[in-house]
Image 1: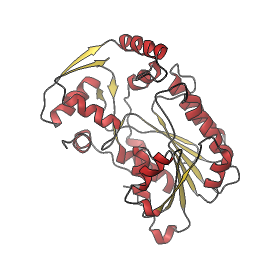
Image 2 (image 1 turned 180 degrees about the horizontal axis):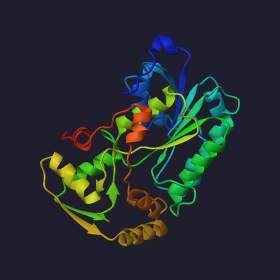
Image 3 (image 1 turned 45 degrees about the vertical axis):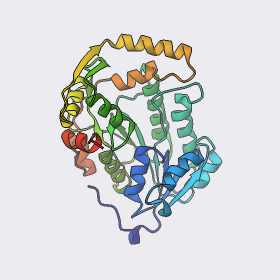
Length: 310
């Protein structure tokens, strides 16, 4: 675990977190609150209420603003030393496009930081993202990454795959599969390499605390790559269950998603979303873990933590 300075030694260190009300943001707040001044940026009063319900709420300054309001963002960042940029989506809608969520918010942040004292921006992206990707979400993420790397403010890009944390959407979905006797999934042979949310937070902390990480792209995934089918079976065994997993062609899912996109303003699933969830993840994170001085949570412990019975 990366050590962070004591409160007494970091009195003047402030971290700005955008998109702070998400599961990862709330977890990061809890990790940083004892040692850093934390300023959380959210886009609604409802999101702010989630921050205010945290045990650390009294130590956190929360601001509600439009992520594309560069004036407000500049004011929020003015006396900050680091920024953790967590804003992002995997499902696009007519009102929340990939361009707005990724590229435009990142461009606004860069503009807002021009006169700031920020030393580094840490951006959480998706494993497999690149600007020339055929997948709209991964391409948008890749373009946002490039905006940061081209900016004057130093940046660290952390690319991660499926993140599993207590109570988050991915863990709840996997838990549901672990308790369903029969599961129909698209391309069950697709490779997954889930990483524990706590490990992503430790990587972010390292990105704040360690030098020599400016303008770097680091790919970080969990310690084990396995098929989607095997992951569901593994999750079921952790619950003492036995389940069946039946694979459907991805083309079927893409067809269904296409119909949803044509008929609904806010479809439950899109083709780009399926593409993000489907790509094969299989990387060795040993070197990156050594660089960041973090230890990864093994898969069985991750499953016990994230899908344990209530």
